[in-house]
Image (tube, rainbow, N blue to C red; front, side, top):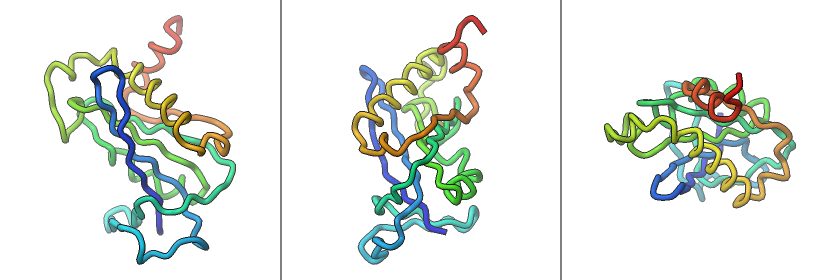
Length: 154
């Protein structure tokens, strides 16, 4: 299975937020020889970087790795979601993942919900994808922290 992938770097002040956008590909417009691919045998899919987007009304799932996770932490779920025309925005904070560790950023978990919010806003402003998004969902390992930030009265 082919999955589109674009990398975006966003900033919230001095904090760097790396994201991977995963999406269904418009295979009619795809000439695979023109794109960089990355096969993942474990999960059974191939990422195609900057491939043409299949323009369908869809749901956007924000995948949050949580402290010590990474952009691929929920990849096991991506294949089935993409088959059902979901868009996925996988979010990772520099210093708070297994690829970049900074003890101070690990402690500053309260900044993560704000970073996810800023990332989503910047993504929807930057990309024309927003006109295809019907609903936005959150999935991840810091969901409780995010909900405390968004709805503190819960």
